[in-house]
Image (cartoon, rainbow over all chains, first blue to last red; front, side, top):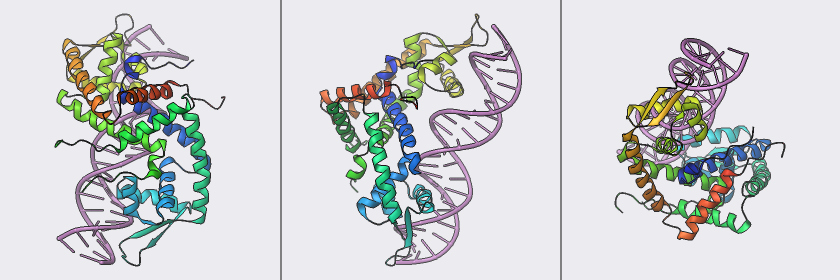
Length: 151
Length: 151
DNA sequence: TATTGTTATACTCTATAACTATA
DNA sequence: TATAGTTATAGAGTATAACAATA
């Protein structure tokens, strides 16, 4: 049973392309990160904590663009794996400060390598220049401010 | 409250870029198609039926790459809007033949225009050549056969 | 026995509402 | 009164399992 390519009526649609590119990358990412006992969202949390240093849960959620209620389970999971630690802020006892453990930093390094290899495989159908252009183009449309009803 | 751009640690990740590009397009798509009482998946079904002529539910699901159980609700919704018709195949009475109604064809034309305009807006941050390159690159990675455990 | 459509069910991801504690 | 974290809950979107009709 060989692979049926999607018809042109679908591959001409940006929605179809982005959805399936995303789904496929998610699957490849899960496969690449599974040996490191992480998924892509967890790895992103570790990377953000590494880049910013310790953050409150709310601040980390803000950087990641996710809801604070979503953050709770994410931190629960990472804390359960001893990759991050929670502690109460002394300055404001409402806040949980989250920071990487030594193990978390080590895991981050390993997993980032696996992710980089996975991305290289994912982009392998493209020439290097085209792969770079893809990333630049995606960045441009993602960072572009949404145009609201006002203008 | 002005827009906080995501940090480089995230925009350097293909997973983050594809996810957010996809989420944003989905939102813009919903907004563009709402006046036509359709969502992106429904429009894709109409487009596939238009391109292939009538199809059984299973065949249509196969073209769209979705499960036959997912197809049921999708056809229910479109039939409820009188955009498609179901009828039993005479040749094989297990099969539901699904085809566009005249209203479905008209709706498809309107909605496809709205979709094209939405895509143009979405890609507006890019030069024309870059937009075309993005679509070509996405098509290449989506159509590329997944490399399984065998290689 | 296998296939098609259907229904019931469950799972993932995410957000909203409401609660607790702190400010 | 407002904010941070938490919990319970709900809504998309999708898939798996089981069933009826048909082949």
